[in-house]
Length: 100
Image (cartoon, rainbow, N blue to C red):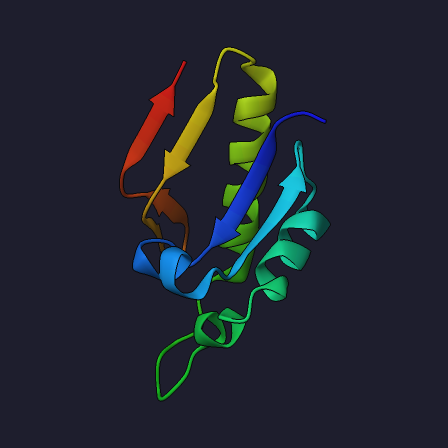
């Protein structure tokens, strides 16, 4: 079927909660929004107990760009980004592992 993108909270949360969503790439902004809203942990991203919500537009844009990067570079066999930091202005990769 082709390359896919997976989204979840990452780290131990993926292993413990198994709370992730998948799409075939490349994805649109609408696809990214649906992926993020599908996970049960979405409420955490919305902000709880005084925490600010993440910048969803930055996160959606990041997911779209990552999907396009892999789509345009078929030599990429695997791309793991964990964590992704999202602030008021942008989303940025904290650590990246690429298998070609």
